[in-house]
Length: 169
Image (tube, rainbow, N blue to C red; front, side, top):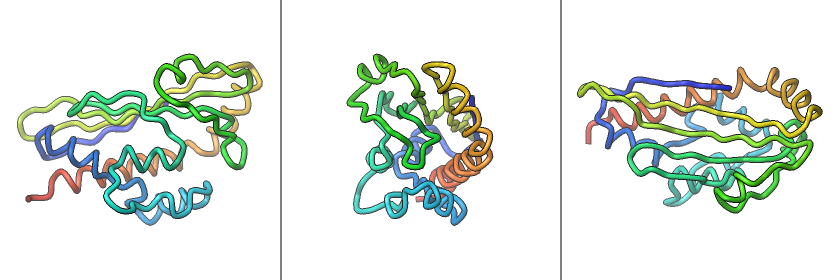
């Protein structure tokens, strides 16, 4: 449903470390958009928490991690509601089993992809599954409004990852 990628002038291991240290609110615009969504201070990194731990503060569940290659997160609920109408998902098995009528579930990844020796591709993709016609209609209306801003946030995240990975240590 939504895909963004960026070439990072760093080897895959540095790109992976940059993902784990990433800041979802790296840009002022992304921070504003997260605040408007109601995430407020949860968007800012605190303490030694890594990126997956910070995403869990937003209600995401880490579904899978292939160390050095891919992180996958899940979220379920009625995203078009003010507070997101989120349902607590315990783990990958619960996410796979989730099928509540009137809701949607979303899977979101960050992946370290192809490398040519000089650069690595880092990408993010979001996929959505609807449960019922009403959920499909409501989510599509919501997504028509949110998609451009979601894209800006994802691209800002990829810029932050690239900046961290390309930094000389």
